[in-house]
Length: 570
Image (tube, rainbow, N blue to C red):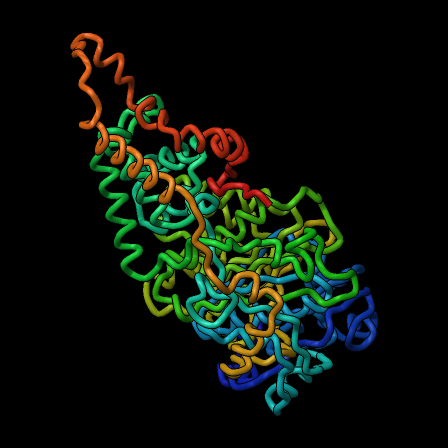
């Protein structure tokens, strides 16, 4: 019989690593860049391992650059000679970090992120609880950190990462991140507004109309103006050729927009719009190229504590960031290291209440963005939080402890075990017995095959495990060269102003009409002379000028991705 994993044999207090608490600050040793082991020589270490453990360790003996996760746990012992690692080129094959609350998911995210940065790979993190900003500062040594480092054979050195801090719409401390309504698109906006499938399709029709007529939707008032026009007597015929817009459905959309803005969420839409290529590092916003080959990768932290009570909004905004990258980045195929790794924390919020079109778009984006050199890690509580079609794309797995206190918990535990390859461990027992800072791991090898399941005691992060002081965070934001680019909102002429100008022109024409000499009535010819609504609306001088200068240009340039996000003019 196989040896029983450590988690089932010893009490939680000895398994749990107090080093991984917010008050500690630390980080793992620099990631491996060769096949040379960091502990005793590989041959000596393998000879000292039990046969079953040696077989597992052999599955992680990669030749190329890799990230070090920790040391193998077997039969109640931590084996520093058996290192568990992830090949760097496989990080764009996506991954899952899962586990119950308090089991160490955030520290695992930090551990992987700082090693990616050390390898020159840019990283994006969503900081929902406000405790990830410490990745920018060196950690602080203490007995718990050094004890963990000794257990796993880690040479712990305090080290921070170059970081930028962002905030959605400037709400909270961070460089403001905004998107225009046009580029956000109908699918993502429907998720934010909690529209049903029929309403989502109608919203798509509205976007299609605005795209074709060159009406840029910069903020919420632009979209409201277009919806109001299309449901007016003058505008109703505009959509008949493409399916029409029911007055009741338009009313629902308008009410949803009004409620959304009343909650103070209008600030998230507008200009200047955030260029997602900033996430790739220094100079990316202008040239599309990241920092130099030997420079550490930039860690971009989206601070979300101020909007954590708006989960549908921030989770969908995260998807916009990813979809915009997908839309803009060139195909690169298989690369030596990812162009960017994107961590999607609290991933279950993204899928809650999602429409079929939204889920299909997520699946397609995750499937295809790998070829753009981008890796995506979903961070959540159990694999069942992620739809099966998306879960099937996640090649790297770090599963922390699960609880089994209720029948639902038991069901989730059994479902989680079934997602792992065959293992020498009793995973049901292991997953309920491992402590904080320990996890069940399987990744893709350099050849793309799953590695053996390895119960692992994870390394301690080398950066600060907890938030940096508020004054330091504010200073980092203000001192950023990006702050001046995005800090002040801009309200330029867009759909609202153009439609308002059209209405003002029509009112002026109507006001001057009585002063003109009356013309003989021609009852039968009147409908023909007045023309259709299209001629009435588009025949004004303002709209003729608009269509000449904007319609043909923007109408041709707006193309939309699988998520309905628009490719912006750079």
